[in-house]
Length: 219
Image (cartoon, rainbow, N blue to C red):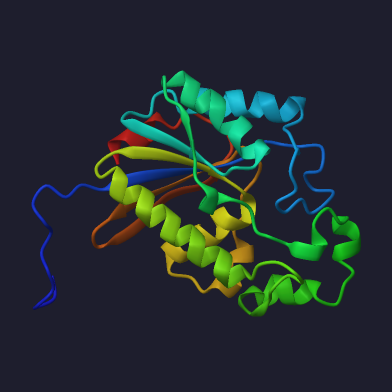
């Protein structure tokens, strides 16, 4: 330990955060939903949500399940919480990126816009017209997760959110520049695990789409 650095505080324990992207909707991969309301999971998405609950069944000490206020996130969180006898806690700061005037537009058409290469290569410098910047989205997600960790020291929490917010949070945990966050893949109903300790986060798994994750209990 470097001279002059603070030692660990007595009783301080790491918090494991399990980030879950919502399951499939009818628009996934077709349109940019942003914060559009009344967008529900499709039948496959509902099956995926049940599958996530099963995959987490052997992870101990899950103290709380938090979700973005958008329907697709809440519907993904519900079976996870129900399996533990918990209620879904809605956290507004976990919501999707506000894409403003691009909400609901076809991804095929958006990829032909001149701004698209900027979003892929220099997202830290881009703000959606009438919406949010990637930098602001990352800042609110990182702050929200920090606040949730403080509520549950030494425990495990589930955070159900959206692709870009999770990617940006993982990028921050890795110490990578926001301009590199598009290199991270976060599939529907995937699980990403980050353990947060006083000396920094450790990314345990990213974009896990199958298999039992009970091994995370031995972190």
